[in-house]
Length: 469
Image (tube, rainbow, N blue to C red; front, side, top):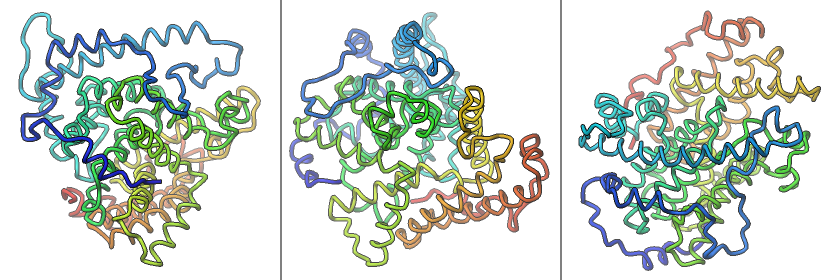
């Protein structure tokens, strides 16, 4: 939970950079900084490691057919080599993109032209509207050439002045964010870097809520954004029961409890130390930040849903939330991250449907793998029996709706909350119609066929395009 160190942070770290200076992205165009990154080693920073043990990034093979066989050492070596190359290219691509975003387009023959002017202009325009609930993260990811998470996080860190407040080194910041982005597996239909960027954008919207924003400290905002960006890092594309029944080492390591969430947290801490992002801070402060990140990420464990809901409802019923207390703010950050993680049904239908299809595709891939190896097929993972509308109808009813009803009460309610609840109810109605109008087999063959339009349409009305404060 939160600690009483907000004032300590402010007193220890005094900004020495003009926060009104041009965009910090320009710093990355420095050849000296590029050389510094290329020369920096990637060994784990153990300057103040404390007692928290972390996991070595990329040391485990993906959960696929190879994971059920004997060994994948050669594949791991090749994967490590590819990671190093991708990291260097990612930095070059980001430097190039940052110059384009500022209108400084290089025209030298040897320059790295990965994105044209029109695409980067559109990406910059989208960033100016990043606080709007109808933000299309799929489009933004295309416009940034697959760098939506890094670009979004750098922008939000600049918006909140976190680079200046915590005196973050820009090279180390980009190194850390690049590690996070590349450690999401793009072959996962759902749990990938685009999902992380989507959750981060939603988290930003929640941090802006009037009920919460006036009480947030820079530390709260830093932790909230980092937790959102890294909450599913290195997700293997299968769930915890799959890891347990296949005897995966992570299940044994974490004793079958919050296995994936603990792995995401420890991987995040490993990347923070490897990048050295917090190495300039006092050891007790950086260790406390690592622990609070763990508390936030572990809150996304869906098996703890009732635990958080009951506590949240008790606070709301008793009207005893005091956001001047760091522990209470931390609890609300946990709730906000939980909301951001499952907010897809609260988006506009077209965005919500894409996410629904992606998560179900990932479920079905796990089911196919279980069938191939004669394992019991997990709930929701049988493509022949579990239709997308049925899965979404149940997910909304039992997970999303109760959580957002609590958030709706907390915001009293805000314009954003009313917009989200409007989308949620219309999307639930739409999935319900699809569920009962089609057989499971027909739904899989024609997932968009004859979609009934709920009364009032599928959009959020006039509020869709509002820039939610």
